Length: 347
Image 1 (cartoon, rainbow, N blue to C red):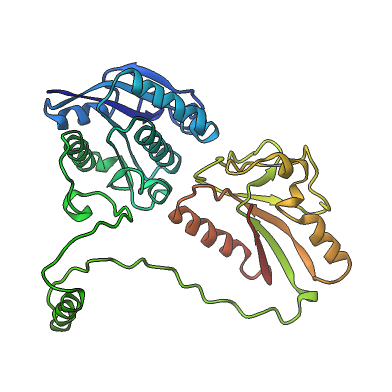
Image 2: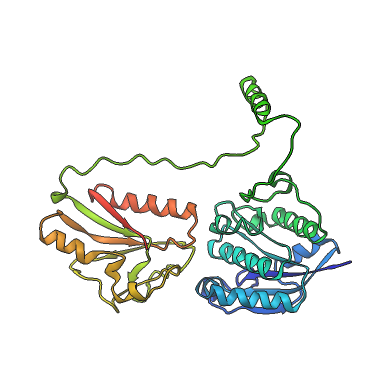
């Protein structure tokens, strides 16, 4: 039996173009396109790609429900046995799209799905519970390693075979716990692991604990009435027209904008670029997300020293941890020595 598979890729891997073509609407092409050839070779005749769905990353981010429905209907039309998305590597919007379509196809059609992403891609945390995501490199140079693992996982699912652990199969830990029975009770196993650790011997934990960043709180301002305070937001407030083209989801950049002499963020002069909440009220009065009007009032009342002349903005919606850390570090360096405090607003 040869299984039928539908493949999802973005505009870049389809050879259509880069960011300038990220707004293309979804389309379906018969057979193999782009990285689908590597996937076809990895199937070794056990499965064939009957169709490839292509969608621009920006289009998907701005039309997630409609684009997901399009994908589901296309997969249904071809009566596919399995669905593969990507690999997306560290491309945030692409990873989010791959995860979203895998979730939609799996839930609505009940067929196996798989994708592949870099571990810090925002699509991982958003969708790892809904689909198998192969651990991939941070760029397309890892295609040769990711594709065979994707092919193996989707083939085994279509055959009805039980998959092993993330370490055995090469997929990212999903946070799904499965009952397992041992001859020894947990206390005995824990003591054996402790003894191995004390001896410097190899051991493997049965449940890896999450790692959390620890940020030491800064001391309080000694005199807020003399402090220069900056505004930073992940709520996407930008000058009207979004001059830096900050993405509605999975942002790859941030903007720096002057508010020298600005007392109020007016409708039609500022807007939100954020795609994760209803933009209506933020666009009517951008101060609702970035409170320049309130800060100016406090400044005039001498309750703060001064509002810094620039604000910084990005979009937190689906943005990867690596990018968020980079934004914070760069913005921090720009503000260091120039301000006494920062107010960070969200949505």
